[in-house]
Image (cartoon, rainbow, N blue to C red; front, side, top):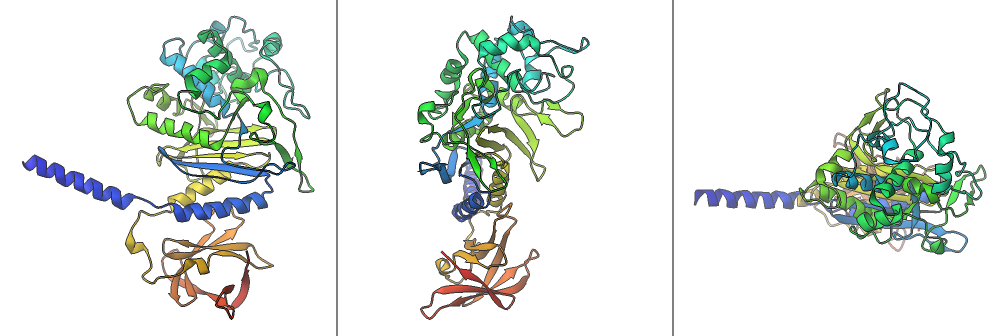
Amino acid sequence: MKKLILLSVYLLSTFTYAQKESKDYSEAIKIIEVWLDAQRDFDNLPGISVSIVSDQEKIWSGAFGMANIEDDVKADPKTLCSICSVSKLFTAIAIMKLYDEGKLRLDDKISNLLPWYNLQQQYPDSGPITIRALLSHSSGLPRENVFSHWNGPDYVFPSKEEIKAKLSTQETLYPASTYYQYSNLALTLLGYVVEEISGKTYENYVKENILMPLNLSDTSPEMPKSLHGNQLAIGYGNLSRKGERARLNFFEANGVNAAAGFSSNVEDLAKFASWQFRLRDTTITEILKPSTLKNMQNVHWIDSDWKGTRGLGFGVYKGPKGDKWVGHGGYCPGYQTSFSMHLDSKFAYAVMINANGVNPNKYVYGIHDLLKKVKPKNDELLEEDNINWSEYEGYYYWDIAEEVYISQWEGKLALLNLPSKSPADSMTLYKHIEGDTFRRIRSNEELGEKLLFERDQNGKIVNMKIHENYIYTKGK
């Protein structure tokens, strides 16, 4: 009986704690939408789509701008983009599935698995080029095959047979297991290993063993040409000095599909992230053994400068705050992608941009830092008085400063500067004093200067006063 009582107390306390720890992200999502919409304009992006995952839940996805400017096709969370090097994650998972099945070993030599492999090793004392080295980009192989396929305007990628025919004309850059050297060629060859061992085409193997089981119905190991310009976004180049982006031609990765050929959308990548969180928390095999995925997401290579770190297929790296992230980025003609997982918090982010020249990771970190500020639900956090926040919310403008957005944040008034690198860092909180008067909350919780709002004769908020000047006018 005593044990039963103790168990009941434990369950009750656990339930109560879970209730206290639950969080409402709605205010954060509203600010994220405002921030992304503004950043799209200030960064002059054609379109951006984003998905946010908390473990098994997709808590938000959205898109801003255009998938096709010329034909007025709006971006959508289901808009497809090239995910380019994020393709490498699917190749790595395919290799590690074969590893789990005992069909290859991480220390197998690439020359033993591909009978036709004949790339020249220019360092006689080099160690072997292994599956492990290829996955961790420490093989010493050159970055690319011999063909100049990244050059426009047509971006002609070679076929597998063309790559094989010219492989003997290439040589290693370094001895194996000496330096980190990112290599599309390495992952291309691993795609050929999948074919050699499975007896299937790379594309069919990935579809049957990864995409279909995970219901990634919008993800393909190829670029669907028939959807280009509609469901598949048009890609645009870097900003010119005139502030313009050129429309880039459609491309197909052909023999480089395993390294850079996939297309997907942020909603499918959200499912992909949830699978990984799910697998890390179980002992049941789902495509991979849980221990295998965890091993892939640990550091397997540290460069000699102690900065470059890689897992098996995955990038494993420190974020701006020194915390561990895993994932991969993608950069192809007209498209940039970030697939980023924060393992400790079980948050993941997919960001797709149909243009070049802007690092999507800045959006990942900006969103993550804001979500971290959200406190567990607690009625004590709310102000006592009943404020009609919608009266104050909106954009405010001053001709000699950045625009700002006023919103609500956990019972306080939040002022967000736009543009900004991080909404969390650029958000200032104000405490309601009385009427239309607020005061800034300093970092030590003391109150600072006043913020006042002015109404017109109809009682509508029209101006905002700071430091005794009505400097911001409310806009649309």
